[in-house]
Image (cartoon, rainbow, N blue to C red; front, side, top):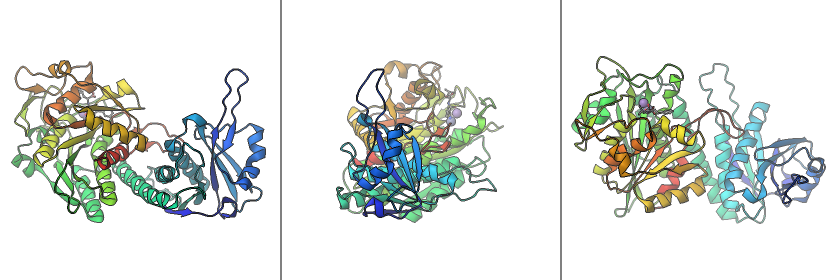
Length: 501
Ligand code: BES
Ligand code: MN
Ligand code: ZN
């Protein structure tokens, strides 16, 4: 997708499709209240072209609602698409992100390959933030997961232009726009990894993909396997891989900006289970195919590292992905086995399906050994988190309020939804083992929290954030602005968190 900025008046832009946004400005309440759509542009020609249909009442400017006009009077554009942002008092740059995605997904099945989106003009919508959000949303909307369909027609949008109103600050918009492109493409890079089936994307292949990306953007990347796991005494990580014919991959990405030798070192640790059968505690076969996305946390870290390499914040970052395949086999670990983690702690395996925390335990310990002063991990860790928060919010946990506050601020920029859940000693008590230091499950209740407490044992007192993205890494039902399939959740928020240091 080619992207461009245009500073011309809207009426003079020649395009297949001009997109303008609208908000519902209804203020009155009660039975007589009617939606009141208003176009968010000061362009009189566009307003006139849309006036009749707006007065007609069929378009209410609800979030991601669309209405198409052909041959709009007075415009050089062949079509005019209105996209709703929802209630005026609630609109924010995230609404524009979704509207841009909606516009792109509107064009794709209709064979329209080129569109121009007019940046909204409204007080709540600063030009730069919206330009960034628009191009992010367009990238995200352009992604479809049908890569292995033999009749796949490349329906990608060829050209996406953002038309900037005269009132906007030009240089700020230009910078934000370039940023949005990097962020959107990085999120899609993550999605393309998550989309791959387990037979195509083994731990080894995930390592190769990360290495190729690293070479392209100038990151340092090392990919290790079984031998290194033994050398580092990563008994927890290795125990998950031992039942698979596919060797594990320990992927280490490093971003070291020139001249930065002091200050924090951020450790990004991702769960990279390329397929999770559950192991000997095997999962039911219904929906097991979904477990190809059990590497979404690792893929989020790889995508975030890509964006970091291109946006160059002044902080050192280490990305670690613990990739393995969780399989039942004669060599697989068994319930009751005791494993010794890299930190020296012993873990009683109660359920081999609680494997994510095992690989992360050693990933977190390794990040600390490499000098990380702050940690963030992402994982499709627990079904319990999906029970708690549904497929709307991802779970977030932290042992440090200051570090979490930075993440909370990052969410306002990223527009991603995370909800903080508690940690606590009572939960930590639930995973004490009779035979060793801890056990890898704590029973049914509070399962997302006991999993987080398990990780807490290995993050120890290093400021740390844990993101449980099990419920939101896969979009189960297509939305107007995003296809069904991998969401790429986490990339944007983790990136913003890194940039806040
Ligand atoms: N990968 C799963 C968690 C998961 C569930 C991801 C649903 C995406 C959607 C994880 O490895 C797992 O199996 N967790 C178990 C833990 C249990 C055995 C304590 C779970 O949640 O059931
Ligand atoms: Mn599992
Ligand atoms: Zn898993």
